[in-house]
Length: 232
Image 1 (cartoon, rainbow, N blue to C red):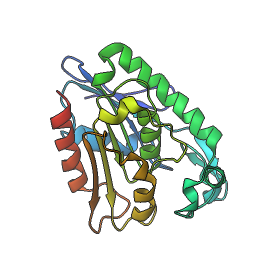
Image 2 (cartoon, one colour):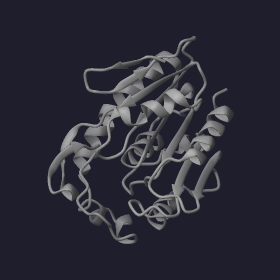
Image 3 (cartoon, rainbow, N blue to C red):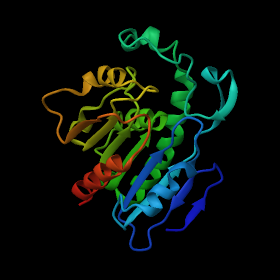
Image 4 (cartoon, rainbow, N blue to C red):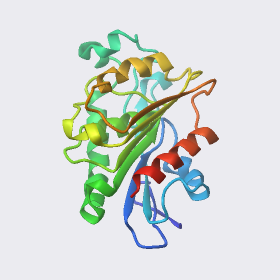
């Protein structure tokens, strides 16, 4: 796969064979679209017929970084929000920029809708790491058509995400490290409680012992297994 850089900084890896699937992937805070380029080029995570879109977050001032500009899907105003209070919408809105979440959502939705026009919703997958995970869950779980699958690594689910019932059957893989200090495991688990419903199918929430805020080989292997199962 030869990477092709887009005007907005995103990178697209086109498959060498017939294009059947698309994966839209978002990086974490202060990273770039190049952050996961080697991972997807060197590891057989998805099938060869997959077009991989590594999206680039806008450059914005970030409050927890003392207002310094960096690539960010949304502003983070509080380093460690209160676990319980964060499920209250009024409190949550003081910890992040709701406007920037919506702006980034629209950016991602443009790519998502374009890929659906090409390969249909059932063959489009979305995922991300950290901030990118938050956005993948926000976009994927609120989308109006059943997607091929959603992958979230080391992030959490916004209390403002409007869960769509149609996504109850969309394959969903969430992986987190028990030693993650950036997005604590307890914080993530509390945010995911809304997903624990009887009708949800194909849902895995995996906690890897002693793993920090990173993507290790075990995570890669779990992703490979996920796509082997759900890229039909």
